[in-house]
Amino acid sequence: MKTTTICLLLALLCPCLMAQAGGGTDSEAASRIATEKEEAAKLGANIVHNLADAKALPEDVAAVFSLDKLDDSLLLELKKRKSLKVLAFSRWRLGDEWVSDASLEILASFPALEELHLTLQEKFTSKGAAKLAGLKTLKQLRMSYCQPLEVSVVAAFKKHSSLAGLALPAALSPALMAAVADIPELRWLEVQGAMSGDNPFKDIDKCKKLEHLGLENSAIATAALAPLAKHKTLKSLRLGMLAVRVWTDDLLLAISKIKGLETLNTDTTSSTSSATAKGFEKLGMLKNLKSLAITYDFAKSLTPTVLKALLASLPALTSLELRYQYEMPLETVSALAERAKLTRLVFANGGITDTDFKAVLGKCTALEHLEFNADGLSEDVAVEALQAAPGLKEVVFWESERVLAAVPGKIRQARPEITIVRNPY
Image 1 (tube, one colour):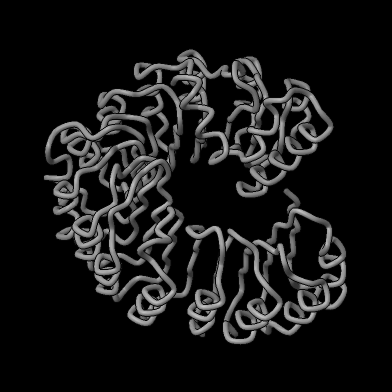
Image 2 (cartoon, helix red, strand yellow; image 1 turned 30 degrees about the horizontal axis):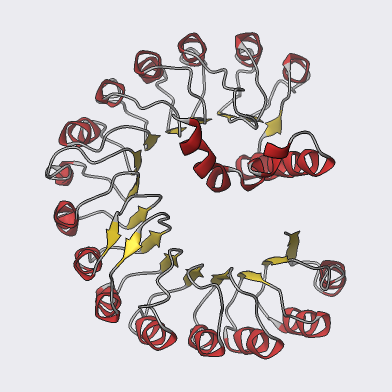
């Protein structure tokens, strides 16, 4: 993968990676520590930095995470831990890739490994990756933003009885999907690669148990999505970075025909849009949709009026994420606040006023998870509204100043059951 492409992806993978470009500052060190803790916590993993850390792990360790440049001697030490089920290796700096074909051969001999996450590791090839098919216990394999891989990697997993999740950088082609169809238990698929051929999903109905499909860098054609509408088990669709070249009404219509969708995530970047209000109205046909994330800048077409109508037409919606506007006007907040069933709400851009914040917390009474940009919010209103939210369990907010620095402590004192995180930027 070219360096420029990597730089574009860093913010998606580990946001603080971008900060480290300036070189070994205290801020960089703090960011790295925070990232390690966050990523390890997601996996319930122990963090290792070197061979000594690996040797110090308890015999019953179940998961390990590292951002460091390691070597195969560490893998041989980890292999001794018979209870190890989850391994995740990423990197912090450009040039710290270390996982090779020889590394994968060692990993393929681990006795109980169920999940393997390899991120920004570019030294292994398709030949090495195919060896992982020997891991009969493997349930999830994520190879994200690594070297482009060949169809032979997927073909190696033919009739694999355990693999349920797969992410890999490969061309999105009929041949790839045909190989995917031969993995009988596969339910979750993410492909990072350009579309090859006119109809890569022509045989997707043969993927009998597929529930989630994610695409990146595919520049998918609208017509290519048509077979997805006939798939019987597909519930989740994520269109990530450059999955779409141009957003159009026809594309939104094609998505709206996938009637079984419960989750739709349009976190595309670097695309253009000619979509209109009419296109977004079509998404109201997704009556089973429970989670909607819109993170591309549709501000010209997805106005507060259109958003309000869209939300009203999605009766099952409980999770909403909006990062598409740089300002969050009162009309938009009012549209959000009418969603009394929302349990998860993210509106990350632009800041919010005291009046708007009270409107959201006062009407979205089912909220359990809230993320927001806190610029413009006063401490008194933040504390009052958060303390009064009956079902709130987790809060994450950003601010450019230190106006709300004391809020997390006050909330923890009054509502210790709420997890609250303040992220300065």
